[in-house]
Image 1 (tube, rainbow over the protein chains, first blue to last red):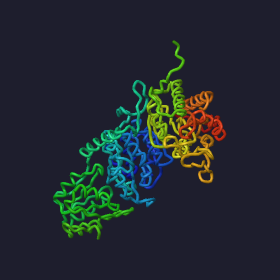
Image 2: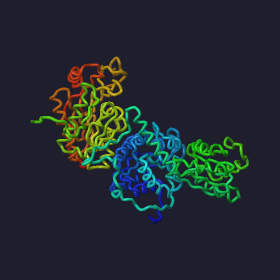
Image 3: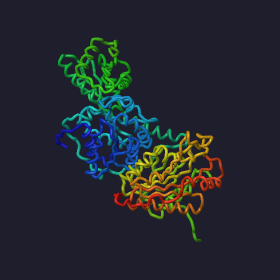
Image 4: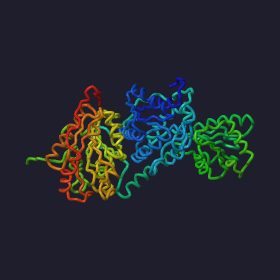
Length: 362
Length: 254
C-alpha cells in the first residue's frame, strides 16, 4: 500500500488478487490474458498458494468450483473463447452459491476472432452467460490501477452475497502498462473467517453438501427466489459508476472500460471547444447504474453510447433511461479501439441532430 | 447380544434410490466401510457425479460436493490443492468418466493428482435410460444402438485402466467386480489400497468396478450378474494394472 508501481494490466490484476487473499488459481493459455497464469505460476507458490495449468478452460473452472467450495479465495482468468467454455462451471457455481472470482480479458469475436481488445462479451457477462436464471457481479476497470484494486472488491461482494463475481476487461487494458497503487492493506487469508458452508473436516459437526440441484417439485424455485432477493439487494446497494462533467452537459457519453478512456480524450477536446459534454462510466455493469442514468435522462439533450461491439450496453442504457432522451451509438466491433477524434466528430453530429433525430445509422 | 454387522458410520441412514440389482449400493457401502476402517471419514470430501450416483452426496456421511457431468477429477483437484490435509474421492460412472469427462480423467492421472477415483463401469447409461456408453460392448443393445453396438458406426469400447496404466502419473489402478460375494470382498481390498495410496501421498489412484444395471439392460438382477461374468469379464479383465510409488518419478505430495 502507498507504493507507486509500474505494471501491465494483467500482472496488476493477478497481483491484486494475491494481495486480496487469493491462494488458488487454475487457468489455460489464451491470448491476450497469458500474463495472468504466468504471473500466478510463480507468485502463488511464493505466497503459500497453489497454481495449476489446467488441461482446458472447462477443467480450470471446475477446479475453481472445487477450490471455492472449501471456502478459500481463488481465481481463474481467460479471454472470450475460453470464457465461453467456462460458462458451464459458472452456472454451476451460481446454482451452488459459490463465490467464485474470474476475469475475462476480452478479445475480438465471434469465433476465434482476433487477439485485439474488444467489448463483444457484454451480453454474455451481464445476462448470465451460462444456462439457468442467475446473475454475475460484473466490474469493468478502465485503468491498470483499477485492474489491480478491483479483485478485492469482487471477493468482498461475491462472499457477502454468495454469487460469482468477474472483472470484464479487454486486451488493451490487459496488455498496457501504467503506474498504479494498491490501495488496500494486503489480506492475510489465515485471518479470514471460514464460511459456515465450506467443505473440509467434518469433525464435530454435521457433514456439509455443496451442489446446485434439487429434484423435488418447487424446492428449486424456492432456492432461486431466495437468490433473487440477494440480487435485488445487490442492485440496491452495490452499484458503482463515475460521472464526469455531467451537471451542465447537453450530451452525455456513456462508456465502460477502455472505451471510457477513449471517451475521456474526446471529452477533453469537446470541452476545450466549449461543447457541453459529459461522461458517464458504469463501473459495475451488473448491477447497472439504472437510477443514475434515468435521472440524467430528464436533463440532457441525448446520450452517446460508445462501445467496442455492435452495441450491447446501449440496450441497458435505453432500458434505464426509458426513452426519455435519444440514445445514440458509436460502435466499433471486433477488436477496433475508437479514437478521441472520431468520438468528437460523433458528438458534434449528435449535437447538430438535436432531439428526435438519430445519428447512429449514418 | 453380539452385533455382527451394522451400517458404516460413513453412510447416512437413509433409503437409497437405486434400482433392485444395481451395483451402486454395494460400492457405496464398500467405500464407506473403507473410510471407517481407515478412520478418514472426518477429513474426507467426496465428489458426486452426474448420472445415477448424483445422489451420492446425500448418502456419504462426509462433506460432499456435486458438480457438472464428467468434471469430478477437476473438482477433486481444486479441493485437494486447496485442502491438502483432506482425503478427496470422486465417484463416477462410465459415461461421466470415460465419455464426457475423459480429458479430466486422463489429465488428473497425468498430473498424478493425489486423489482417488471410484469408477463404476456397467457398460450403459443408467440415469438417462440405457443409451450407449463408451464401455458398451460390441453387439450390446442400447437405446441409441437398438440393433447392438456396431463398430463401423459406433467404434469400440474403451478400457480405462489399460489406458491410464500407460501414464507415468498413475500410481494405483485396479479393475474389480461386484457380481459375486468373492468379488465384492476383493473390490473392497482394492478400494482400501487406493485410499491408502492417497493417504501415503503417492498420487493418483483409481478403482474400476464392473457393475450391474438390470433395469436398463431389461434383465433380472441374477442375469445381470451373469452378464458381468460372461460378457464383461472377457472384455474387461480383472486385476491390478498399476501399483507403483512412482519410482524415479515419485513426487510425494499431499
